[in-house]
Length: 173
Image 1 (cartoon, one colour):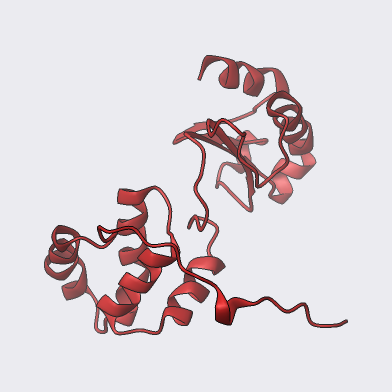
Image 2: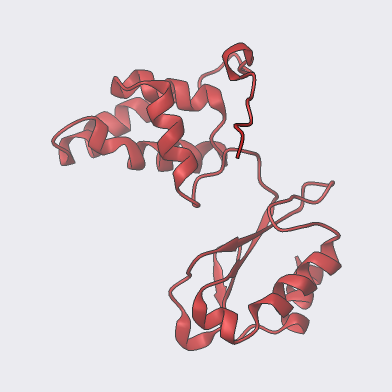
């Protein structure tokens, strides 16, 4: 298998005038988060969560700001953020539909629920509708195996989800 190269060394980071890691957020992290950890590196995940909570996602500028604040390399911060499914490196829709794809949900036909969402929204898994209203993702596990298939619609868990129920949720959003 050959390597697929990307021109990342010449990539331009889009920047906005105001920082994502504001003085207020730095102060809160310094007072409430950093004291709980032995090293600044150990506070990386909570710092990323805090920035994402404020911005809605993690732009490259925000990752660089977190790296600088914690004294880490930007590459290490990007590696961490891109490893975990709960971090968004692209803007997400106003509503996020997350269909569980764990073994229990697979056995209970999560694919029918995902297909209903794909058909209703006209997008594939991992995409956002052109109007920016919906993002469809599949997650490895929502921890609701007893109610498979499970769907997280925004922050509300729906167990024993059916294609019809999810289509109704989309219509009512």
